[in-house]
Structures are given as structure tokens and as C-alpha cells.
Amino acid sequence: MRIDSKLISRHNEKFQHKHHQRLSFLQSELGNLDPVIDKLMKFQVAIPSWALGTGGTRFGRFPGPGEPGSLEQKMEDVGLLHALNRSSGAISLHIPWDIPKDYAAIRKLAAELELKFDAVNSNTFQDQPGQPHTYKFGSLQNVNKATRQQAIAHNIDVIRHGVELGSESLTVWLADGSCFPGQLNFRKAFQHTLESLQEIYAALPDNWKMFVEYKAFEPNFYSMTVGDWGQSLLYANKLGAKAYTLVDLGHHLPNANIEQIVSLLLMEGKLAGFHFNDSKYGDDDLTVGSIKPYQLFLIFNELVEGMDARGMDHARDLGWMIDASHNVKDPLEDLLQSVEAIMMAYAHALLVDRRALNTAQENNDVVAAQEILKQVFHTDVRALVAEARLRSGGALNPLQFFREEKIREGLTKERGTHTIATGL
Ligand SMILES: [Mn+2]
Image (tube, rainbow, N blue to C red; front, side, top):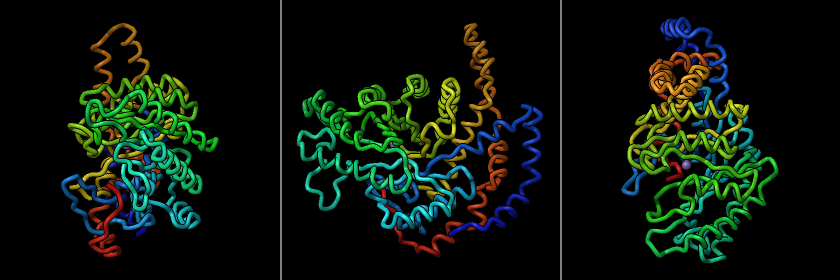
């Protein structure tokens, strides 16, 4: 399903008057906002192929109607999101859930939908049909060399698929670890993992990056072999210049100061990018900004400060992706909400008065520093984000458009009520 641009224009006309009132108010308060709007227009957040179907939990799964049943349909869903918000111009594929059968056709479809291929993701946390060795006791860390070789070969295969599509990075997230004390020799597990990653790293094309993602717990509950940013950074440093640490918001222990982690990884030139989601307790994979929007803003505040300090391009130099999948909302509505939350946090961070904040910090003026951040956080920037969408040809209110134009009903008519998207 493709969205007729005339429908978007009609929708925008309906909301134009109210929108301009809100934008004028912001401009009267904050001055010329064009530089901020330009940055918002360039910023793109990749959508993972596994977030387009209703996710399950280990207790059950309740698929919704009209879910995408193929890679092509998943790409069309991301194309729909991008047509509405103009900020979802990339898709991140998971291998083997989304192996393209015809690269040329997939590349052509991506070009039609104005989508790029973001990082490709390997999967050694599940056994695949016909696979000779099991990952029950880990993949790259496994005590059995043949199992490690199988996992290495899979990652190299994922790179090969990515090259065909024009991806430029491989994300490695490992479920490896242990569930009970004594189960693993930590040092041997680390060494095996490092040696395996080195073999994969050696297969990276020159222009590629490797993202080493960490996670504190789950599915292993005693130790994770890439358990925190320190361990990920150790691997990245030992691997070389093309290896980076990837931060997934849900992969920390409760109350971790993620904004500080981001700041220091940026300082070291080792931050790969982000997997956005939100959580109350653990790796809940909830909608971005639904639980802790202030934390999201503080993270973006450090991202903008740290990237500007290194002269980095906000839109290009880090990987931005959503990594969420849950079981109660329409996945497309949920992704529209997530992208909106990310754009708002980014807009807020762009509005921080850096010079005033620096002065407050240098003078130990704690109250002023806090007020500078709070003042921005409480500014309603929705009209600013909407204006960036409008100037890029998107819809002023994507969620309302999605509902009023009955997009899900249209997809259901096209695909039926019982399609099930591959993924978790
Ligand atoms: Mn992730």
C-alpha cells in the first residue's frame, strides 16, 4: 500500500491554521528556528524489520490483522511510516528472519520507498532448522570450537547479505553468558568471544563498522559475556578502529546513568549509536519516551553536546535505530509514537543554550544549570517537529492521518487477518 500525496496535502490543509498559530508562538518565544528545523529534517531513525509485527512475550502472542508476511511487505510498512513522518527513511534487517531472495528487486523497492538499509543484525540466540550445532550454551563464547565456527560463519554470511543491499554496519548482539555460578570460566568465555569477533571483524569491508551491543541480563541471568559498556568497549578497543559500542536503552541495570555512558563513549570516539526503546523494569521494549521522557532528553543533550564537540554530523555519524517490539498496540501506530518521541528529545537538545549551561557549570551554579535544562524540557516542541515534517512533505499529524485514512484496515484488506510477521 502506498499513500497518495494528495491525501497528505488535504490532511495538512485541515490542520494548517492551528499549526501556524503554534509555530508562530514558538518563534516569538525562541527566535529564528530554521537552523533547528533543518537539522530535524535531516535526522532519520531506522526501523527494525522485527518491530512491524505484534511482538510476543514468552507467555503468548496476539498477532494483529494485516501484519506484513514478507520482507517486501515489511519494507512497504516502513515506507508508509516514512511517507507520513519523513523521518523513518531506513530499515534494519535481521538475518535469518529477513533473507532477501532477489537483491536487485529489494534494492529497487527500497529506492521507490526512499529507504536505505541500516545495520544488518545477526542471530545466534536461536537455533535455526538444520543447523548442526546448538547455541544452548552460547555461540561465539562456546567451549566447542565447531559451534564457534558456525556462529562466525553466520555473521560473515550476514555481512555478505548486507553488502548486496548497501548496508554499512553489522550489529552483533550475543545472548551468550551463564545462568549459574561456576558454569563458565569468565576469562575463557571472554577470550573465545574476542577471537570469534576478530574473525568476523577481519571479514568486514573497508567502509563497514561493527557494532558490539551489550546487555546486563536476559536470557542469561548470572553473567552476560558482553554485559555492560565496559565489556563492550574492551572488545571494541581490542578489535580496532571499525568496532564500536552500541547502546540499547533497555539493556542496563535499573537506574544506570545512560547519559554519562553516552558522553564518555563519545569522548573516546567509540559510540556506535543507539537502539531506542523505553522500560520500567528491564528490557521491556516499550514505546520510546513512554516511561522516562526526561532521561531521553538528557541522553540527547549529551549526544548533541558530545557530537558538536567532535565536529560530528548528527544525522550521519552515528546509527539511530528503534529496537522495540511489544504485544498490545498496532505496531505502526507505536512506531509513529516512538519516532515522534525521538524527534522531540532531539529538538529539545538542539534548543539547549550551550553557552549559558557551560557558564553555569564553570561557576558551580547548580540551580542555573538545572533550570536551563528544565526550561527547555518543558517547552512544547511538537509544532517544531511538525514543521520539519511539513517542509519534508510529511503529514502534520501522522497518527491522526493513520487512523482517519484507515491505513490498518487497508492493509488488512490487502493482506488478510492472519498473517504473522517473523520476529520475536
Ligand atoms: Mn537492541
